[in-house]
Image (tube, rainbow, N blue to C red; front, side, top):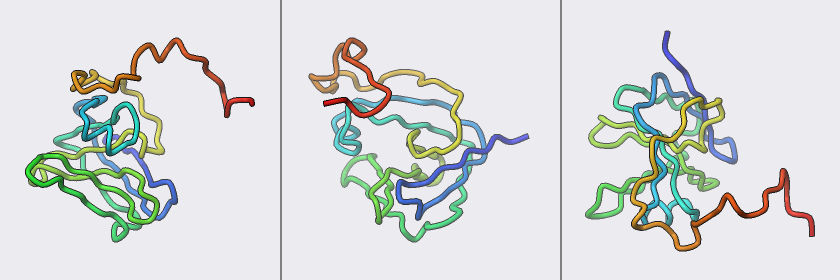
Length: 136
């Protein structure tokens, strides 16, 4: 029995299905991933065996390859949401964890490229937490 995951972009124009398991799950703090996400790190799932099927909106996806690097980013051309990409000549599927609508039961394997970590990304468990927007 194969595992299936479903996902989409923020606006809903692009929907996809992943068939198969993920090999690893990394939180990447490199400067390129921080630029991609506008956040402290990217949260990406990797698989050498899972396959992607675009259910809708594949024509609304844009693939960006940063010249002279292996850095690739796929996103919705309508809303800009990060989307899965097939890389390394079809040998690797990279899925932004936040693009999944299905429950994910695996935890990240590691933080990577922490030498590039943002200076403000320290002791974040010690700041206040709210269930919704902050009350002003």
